[in-house]
Image (cartoon, rainbow, N blue to C red):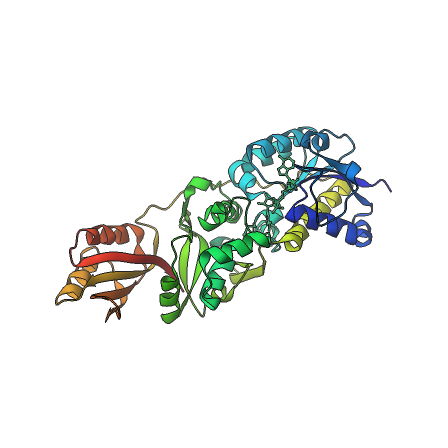
Length: 428
Ligand SMILES: NC(=O)C1=CN([C@@H]2O[C@H](COP(=O)(O)OP(=O)(O)OC[C@H]3O[C@@H](n4cnc5c(N)ncnc54)[C@H](OP(=O)(O)O)[C@@H]3O)[C@@H](O)[C@H]2O)C=CC1
Ligand SMILES: N[C@@H](CC=O)C(=O)O
């Protein structure tokens, strides 16, 4: 049996997991595909670096082109990250007829359509299951499992680092900075963790999920993004007191063929299944017109869970190779994209205000909501224990983003409001 030769770009957190699974499960994997699988060459930044795994030094190179241009190699597994340089490697590999497995959501969110088009041109596979939600097979599920349905909503905790941080802040009262350091040490965070905490990583993943789920070409700029760096322990405590959990949620919905996609810290009603997803775990909730509610749960980051998705993709590529059907499954979004405007985007809001503690304040505030047609679910006014002002906690009904923005703008000019302390989306 002719072995299948794989070129690996990267031997970090995910790359090490890939080598462990390919070597550790060799017998089972090769039985599934009918050929031994050999990792032929591995590109790294520094061949001398000490690693948590032994690999034959002769396999290592500091030049990724040695992998891409190696005629022996059938499949490239890209787990090194990066965008522009990596795109050049991937495009040339495709031109050379090599199939691609990648965990790189940055690359797929920005250049997915170009890469998939190049793959089709060259009858190559490009699989990227690990790019969203680590070990959860959500991409295959959206493409294949929901092919018969119309997806109306995708809601996900798709960043493990931020869920790990919010969970530890909420359950253990830990400090944001300490937990972020821990997430870095555990290999969950991106090399630049700003993209985790500012919601950019989640936005990239939602771009991919939105494209596949709504079968239209969602771009990163279509996603409105807010991260967790401004979420305070006080906000988390308020959420808990009102029966919610604070989560960084990606929310994509489709109504009358118009879509909206956002990533933002969200107060999720405690009885919603996604509210109990903690730590580095991810979950993707999908609502289909026919199927109704579904949810997919698992580790969203880390070496072995992510490598599981990568190696499953590798197996899929090799099976296609054996059948001679590579390149047939590239998804081409076919619907014209229509984005909702701020009048069409509607959700519940939580607002915490610090206000003057005097007569008539509450009336002025509720009057402002009425003026902009924002209907309220609850309003609570209470003195602040340590300060000479009062707090007003408001939860709205579903209201348009446009109306809500007008209320907040109006509040900026109201002298009785000292500070608009927090505003969060509410789900459930
Ligand atoms: N970590 C996770 O949980 C997840 C990661 N991903 C994605 O997987 C990819 C890899 O992530 P991760 O393993 O965490 O990253 P790491 O930083 O741990 O590893 C990156 C690897 O790539 C090598 N590398 C980086 N740049 C180059 C280059 N220009 N030339 C040659 N080698 C290079 C590094 O070499 P050296 O070791 O010598 O420095 C290292 O081995 C990223 O796209 C990431 O977003 C996706 C899902 C989960
Ligand atoms: N940094 C990412 C890694 C996986 O994509 C995360 O925390 O989810």
